[in-house]
Length: 78
Image (cartoon, rainbow, N blue to C red; front, side, top):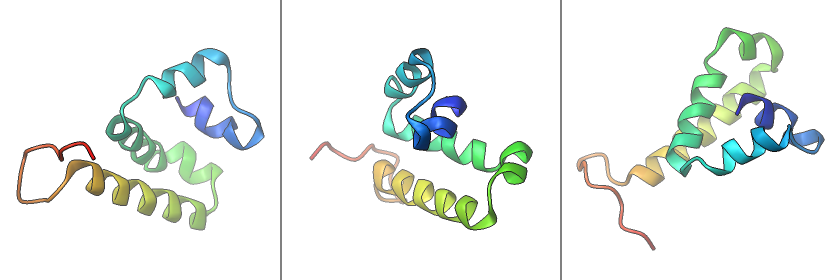
């Protein structure tokens, strides 16, 4: 997963990496993105502005996917 994200701007990672990412749900994908952005390795590799934008985008998408904060029910499909 990390490899596919890391190499995406350059044309992607290995076929296996890309298939692994495509197999994730939207929620699982953005949870993984947040975990990577929070890791020490990526804090060293990526500029702060990139980490901030990736984190903000992932949190917004997770909030949208999970629906209203006051319910545990998943949001109905569009």
